[in-house]
Amino acid sequence: MNFEKVVFAFFIILALSLNFGFFLGEISESTHHHPYELFAALFISLICTVMKFGDRTHFGSTVLASSLVVDGLLITAAITWALATTDGRVISPMAMASITSLAGGALMANLISVILLIIETGQIRK
Image (cartoon, rainbow, N blue to C red; front, side, top):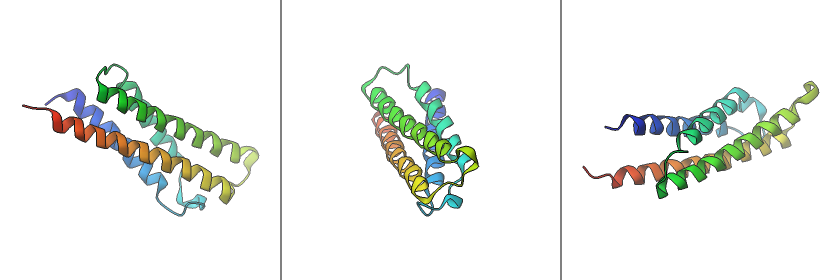
């Protein structure tokens, strides 16, 4: 068992789970999506990205690319949330739908990362 791969798999699956937890719910209803869950998904995704910087394999570069997509989409969602709630305003359903859609795109990229991880794990021979 490779402890480094276990830790990476843990973080990549945690990032997928947190992103799914944020994405789940009515798309434009702000009470169904908690900002701390979005920030937790972003933080864990950034950890996954940093962990993949040293991997020089083709799978590693593809997982790094999908992690960068996740980071970009979640950062954009967080900025959109911050701009929509400046000056104490209540977030509009349109802004919430945009944030949730961005998180949905990040969820798809997270899913691709997990699928690539499963493929890479399946190719390891004893």
